[in-house]
Image (cartoon, rainbow, N blue to C red; front, top):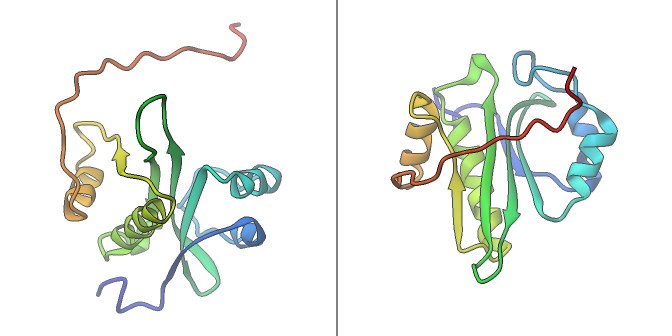
Length: 150
């Protein structure tokens, strides 16, 4: 059974859709949705949030952010893709990614990027199935702790 066989609606949310995020399937995200943060996210025109809805509940989520730097065309950075455990491997993630990519095209993005660890086989397969091409990573990621040190 695939996502197309199930009654699942995949769409990109806008600011008026924040209430939909109050009904999220168990196991999809680690914490409850913070309503003010969700509303701010949806109001930011650079951010994209696609959801998969089944029976009035969010059963899949994908996020992206439109980005650009001096001298480069706009791109879409795919940040997160998650599907409720009971619906994984049924095409829901593929439909979420397709919704993000289509929205990026509509925004004028010329490229989309997704980061995946070498051991994250599920995301790498998902991206490949959508036509993504892995490129050698010449970048070393550096992180900075911004919270107070104790």
